[in-house]
Length: 239
Image (tube, rainbow, N blue to C red):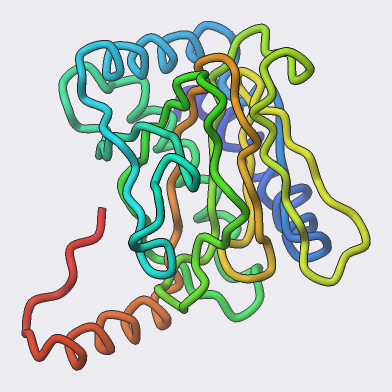
């Protein structure tokens, strides 16, 4: 194994075991700055900007209790789902591979959760027109999502001028956690009702990449419920 790869794997293991696992178990979230470094982070940012500027991002969708409500008042982001294998997404693919390694190292140490798969990556941009995303829970109905991971891509972000804070309301805690969406910051938190959160209004373009890791047992049960509900042998398509 090349020395650089060995050093990287050692660092990832230390981050996973000494920081991510204890923080998730204790307070339900964890973030780390300077995750990829300036050079690779810029490569990811350039690819995200290219997706945006080429018209690949579309309005984020609403479901469940938001149906029939004016979308712009709920969420104002534009998104695209990518696997990382697409042409021009090589740096995004590298980012996803590192996140996958981190989460794999955490598996077996996060309580009863059995994580074996994840969603595609959701590339998102808030256009900077004062839109955000109201307080919500990623997985309120046991759809399988277990851990949410967000990578931020915003250079020279000033929350006093640009807003865009992700505010987490940890269940059972007497505080809120304000996460500034600064460049090369990565955030992990539980996807279920333990972590209601909101994206406060953004007044500059705000880029992020989000992936969700699934608890295998809960995911399988959610698919079974969907089949029973629809009477269909086809599984619901999920990015």
